[in-house]
Every structure is written in structure tokens, then in C-alpha cells.
Amino acid sequence: AEKKSIAARPLVFDFDLMNASESREISDTRLSDLCFVPFDTETTGLSVENDAIVQLGAVRVLKGRIVEGEVLDTFVNPGRPIPPASTKIHSVTDTDVSGAPEISSVGQAFHHFARGAVLVAHNAPFDIGILRKFQGDIGVEWDHPVLDTVLLSSVVFGINEQHSLDALCERLSIEIPSQLRHTALGDARATAEALVKMLPLLEGKGFRTFGELVQETRKHGRLLHDLNE
Image (cartoon, rainbow, N blue to C red; front, side, top):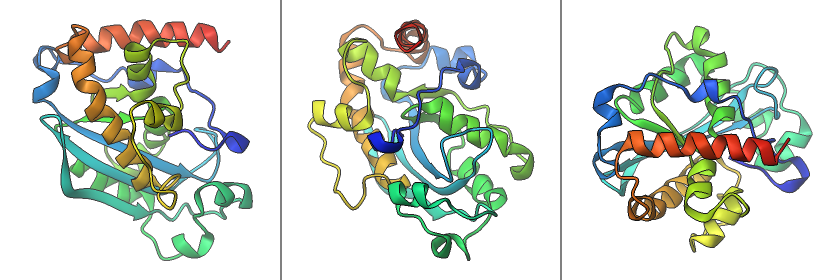
């Protein structure tokens, strides 16, 4: 998820990170029949290569509705101090994570939570990238299908609009309580609400199956990349 402008995550355009195995079965599945797991990570910094996860939150969306009560919300001990500049954004402190589980156990729990689902994140290559960096420690492969709400926003509203999570929520009349913004679960919930509101808009544009939507998001990914070069 994107952060405040003073320390916004750069958009990540390594789309190989999102090219998980896409079987014909899911490619032909209607969007309305899919299970989605919108999630967010809070981290020690803005680098996939150099930083670590300090908080992970996820919710479940089934048949176009958020499944209330089905959540994953946990601090993660990154095994290093959290820089004050990062704490200023997400409010996670060294004290919060001192007794928290490490990424090895949190990652396994999240992998189980997301079994059989499409992972969804805002600026997904960042979150997927940092999970994949630790997959050796976790002992799993992150080979789930992936959707990025940055790209879904571009498909629905056009590439010239702002596609930050705040801008998307404002456009879709989604209210994020201030105490939950820039928390992993709060941003995962906001991403889920945005997804739920965009799904019928996407189907209205003729994208009814997962495969059709992925092909369109790949086009928009290339266009957004060009605009940000």
C-alpha cells in the first residue's frame, strides 16, 4: 500500500514478480466466483531488497463480499531496529515487535490463510516482492495469482487519474478511520473495499473472467510504467 507523501513507496514495475502460474482453470473463472485475499505489509523501509516486514494484515473476499471476521493481523519481528522515519509513518515500534513472531511463522500462517485465493494488494509488486524475498525462510513458494488495485484503478478510471490508495478510496467513497490508515490491516481492509466496489465496474467494462482482466492490467502496467519513467 502507498504511504504518506513524505515517504511514499515508489511504484514498483517488476511485473515478473506478479507472473505467477495462471492455469486455464482460473483464467476462465468469472471474477464473481473467485476468492480474493487483499493484504498489506508494513516494513522497515521502502526497499524490497534491503528491508523487512514488521506488520502483516489480510482479509478475505468471497463472491464479491468481504467475509467479516476472517482476518489475519499480526506484528512481525524483523530481527533489526525499525528506523524512526518508518515508525513515523506506520507507528510500529521496536517494542511492538519485540515479542512478535518472525516472518518464518507469520509467512506460513499467511500462506495457509491465502490457500486457493487470488492475492490482491495496492502496488502489489512491492508486497509480493518482499514476501518472495523471505520465501526461503518461510519454506513456501508465493505462486498465487495476483491482482494489483493500482492497475485495476487504471482500468476503471483511466491512466491519467491518481491511483494512490487514498485517491482511490476517495473516488469510491470509502472511509478509512484515521487510526487504521497506514496499518497493515487497515490498508488491507481499504484495499478489499476498493476491490469489492470495482469488481462490478470491471464486469461492466466487459472483463468477466480472471484471464480477461489480467490481460488488460498488463497493458495498463506498461502504460503506467511509461508515464512514470
